[in-house]
Image (cartoon, rainbow, N blue to C red):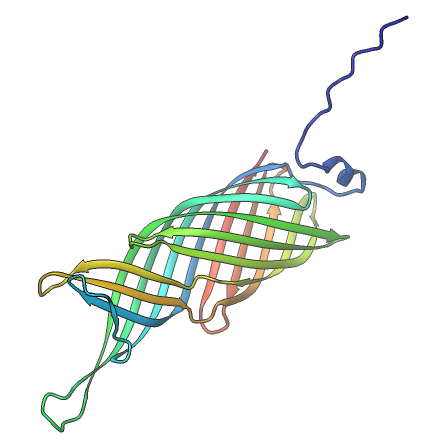
Length: 264
């Protein structure tokens, strides 16, 4: 009895179910990507409470004496790595640096110098510079029909800005728009919307100019957490593409990103 021919082991490739998607006429990107993400962000920050304690005393709120508002300008450059697990599921990770420049405007009410006098009002600005690192994970769920596509992104990041507690950010976003070609190159254009869940309490300790230490807690969040805008991507080749996003919070805040990606 002739021996049966050896069976070839099943092949494994990403994305899973990719052959089924291609059989339906879906053009898939190469599964792995490495890119750079640069973004600039300008926005108003709401400081909901400021607590200060001296020489180890529990921090107490001083917000009843001061009105605080802050404007932040943030530059960030990250390395982004991603992989398409399924044609509809992408997982990605980022690591990089962040440079924050902020101006905090303070309106301080002080008791009168003389009994029966009027309270004193002080108005001044405090510029600050904070540099740190950022790392995060995320996933993208994508779907399409004809030349229409939609994608939902969930991103979680952790920022180390030198405080005793690290910032945590969670950013759900949605993109929807056109998927097609310009000439022989793949291209996409979309509308985007993001909700910035970046409320945090920054804690730390600094030296007191009068001696000892001052501990502080700053409860802050974006004044306008929703942004909406537009984006575009263009494939220079099968392996190299560049994408860009622009969005605004419709109150003077905005951000812009540029993302070149190499796929393999």
